[in-house]
Length: 125
Image 1 (cartoon, helix red, strand yellow):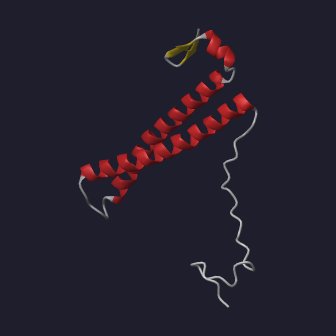
Image 2 (cartoon, one colour):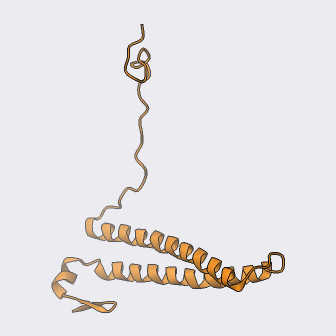
Image 3 (cartoon, rainbow, N blue to C red):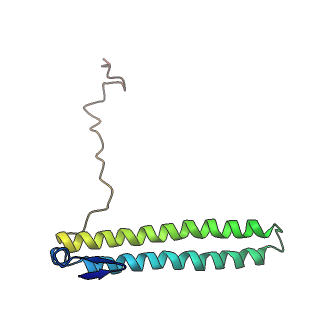
């Protein structure tokens, strides 16, 4: 049995997917990075708002709410980026190819063929 976090994976599955421990380590790192972003972001935002509270006085509950909401958004974003990297790593380990994440190229329509048509398809003489 191979341990991945709290779960145990059968040896047959681990043998079939040799990149599984690397992927699990990457995911663990991604979640810890997101957790760290939440903690340090909340502390940093709370401290920054406390410093600004002299100029903009508002209640402590709003200070906490703003800090928690913004650090949650930041944590989600960091975790999402890191998890995407782990998914790319998994695909690389399984298939040997890195997925293409670039947006598809859109070709421009040939204007000479459509110069005598309106947008409704009517032919202009």
